[in-house]
Image 1 (cartoon, rainbow, N blue to C red):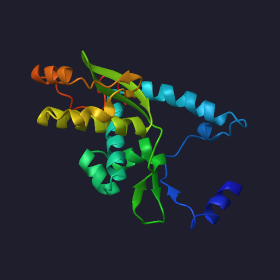
Image 2 (cartoon, rainbow, N blue to C red):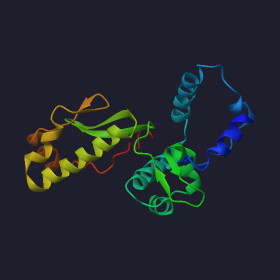
Image 3 (cartoon, rainbow, N blue to C red):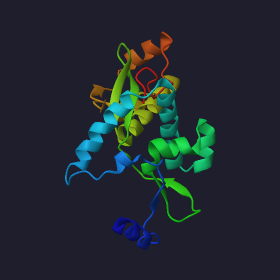
Length: 199
């Protein structure tokens, strides 16, 4: 009750998180002090691994929509473009969305800590990696763009900033010969999110 009153008092001074789907009574039981973070972390991992293929795809789309919102797209436009419902976006990434006032524009927080299953180009083909948070996912997207720019132009300077960089513990391939050979063999890298492991 006190928490509800506090939230109502602060409504006009703090951005609101978007409402998440209603939880069961058992999920609302208060955890012992100091243990909620570890228990939440232990619950989230099996939840991801147990998602069906359909739900993994829905979560992927929600993450893509979150990125679009982060880059300026409206909530409705991002949902439409990614082919996912607004309810599904709230379900999977709602904690990273904010609305300053009722009816106001929905925006995304600059960073999040959602687990993502990605694939990166390896020297012998794509490698499946797990990353925690949007920072590495953004870095990987920048690398993919730089790789494509190098293959179009032959300008190795596009790869320079990624020398020695790692994503999910794996070094990014920046050797021009390897990248060129992969391109000549028809290897493409258009899918950032892994469809094999799920996300």
